[in-house]
Length: 197
Image (cartoon, rainbow, N blue to C red; front, side, top):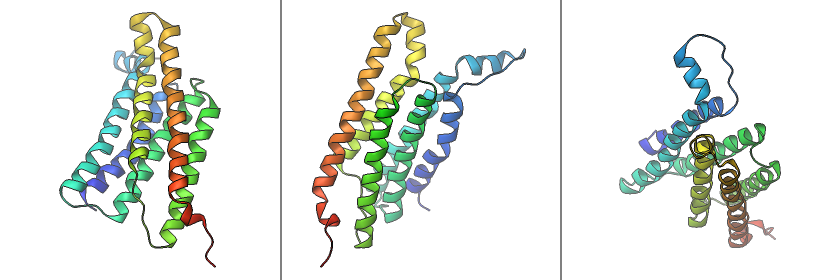
């Protein structure tokens, strides 16, 4: 397995780590270190998520620079992005921060794109991510990073309503970009949905 694919795998392995720190932790004890972890768990999740996001940037650059682009790499890169983003958004629904409706739209778009990719694969085509899909993923990652830092921003600024409003706007921009990129993907790949005669 080449380095870009290992970076995609690392992104997948970091998912449960991010989830662990987003979901509420409880600890009752005298350890200052463990109390610090519990009190700053969202901040820790943010830094782990940023590391995972950077692997997405690096794997593509390395693959292109050293001509290490493979079908497995195209598959792993896309899969790792989807798994990371959807898992974190599910955690945000679990803690009541975002709407499940928005998440549902994002998940349905990913099912549709995956279905088209499966049909393309049956015809011998492995589809890499398109530019609009990469923009969508970047916007999603920026919004998630903001939401992860949100408790710290609220703590520092004291303006909870404004900080949460910005988070909501960023999340709904993600949902809109998801719909736009999904429609673009569908319209550009209608040929894979036509039955052969």
